[in-house]
Length: 73
Image 1 (cartoon, rainbow, N blue to C red):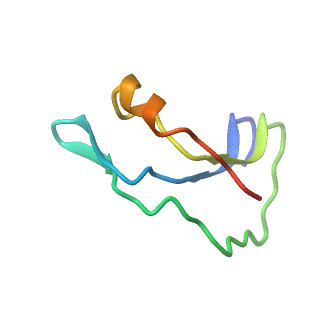
Image 2: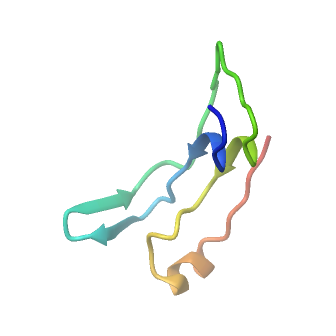
């Protein structure tokens, strides 16, 4: 991947469902990711080589405040 904001992104959804648009929804995940392996991977001129993101802006702001993020590595 070259010249992008994130060469690779790992997204973890919160444990509640959310509606992004009438035809698109997300959430309801366990919030855990394990044993991720990248092979033959090259990052050139990206803002982040690998980015972990634990909550997307797909739910109401009040709900986001009630579900604080935490990432363990």
